[in-house]
Image (tube, rainbow, N blue to C red; front, side):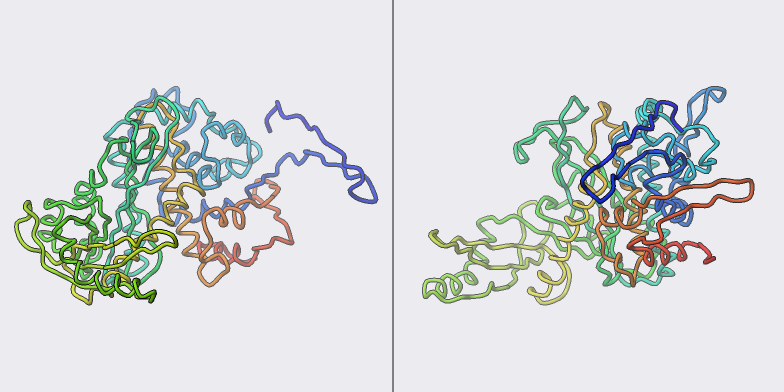
Length: 458
């Protein structure tokens, strides 16, 4: 235990028939006892070991107290448990459960790495380390789902979605963006989904400067990803869904050269608006008669000046009408090479990509992936990659929680239900015993996940 910890207590009077005394005197207890599941899931995936092996250790061997594997795991497990700030290391260094997660004796072994040690670790990475970590993360995700599906997947859907990451300091490449009205980074998040499964699995999170256009890095990510996907899933058709920031002749030509199914939103222009005009008129006339009218769908062939050929355009015609305001035309346009009826392609195929925004909200609200407060850009990129790896662990927990109440829980709910559990630890030469509450609310869910990762009922 930390020698600086004081065993100060308090007493409540008037809350019960007798005074209630509160004492902080459980020497070998933790408030994150359920985090042992993270270790079990990580061992199954081999994630932290793979990430650590992709880093180069340039430190002097005779001065090393904490290996790279320990530093990666300490940061990874802390983020997954909700401790996103590096300063939390000072409070967790003596926590018995975190020492156990790093293969240390939870009671007798030395403390874990301090906050300055972790900060030096974050500041030591370079661009090549970041590239290897990114590839390793994507490789672990692909290999996990190849084993899960035995490679028998008919369709893989790729969703790439940009987001903003507000900054509040002197971070490298943090620039003012007028669209978001703040100094920020503009990360690019990538997700994979298999066949008709609703879950989207994170495979990359690329940090970019605050002026980066939406499509920057898109081709680089796909060029690394597609060969590995086709090796793991040789019979699968690959589909990509993108919003309006990803338009451009070079993207469409790449998609077609790689035989991808694509459906991409495109901003309106006078030519496309002329295509939509015949579909808009019946809707406006119905509104003039105070009648309700659903949006209409159609299609056309269109070729921009920079394109090498015509492409199919899906048109969704709609009129936005608010009380006290004039009706406003709201046409939407999609560029696609996928066969199907326009309404089906828009509502059932393209609109499915919107769930990626929910995954990004989980990353921000549940794991605080936007805690990019390091001054060096590559240190911040390391943080978001470790947070992405923590999200991969949480998605695996959710996958193993199927048929339970936690199967669709958000990351923050998974932390409260499965991680934040008080436990006291006993260690002997033969075994380590964790004592957890008898009346644990989600005990059945926790036990089901534990058994799915190799725990044996006793």
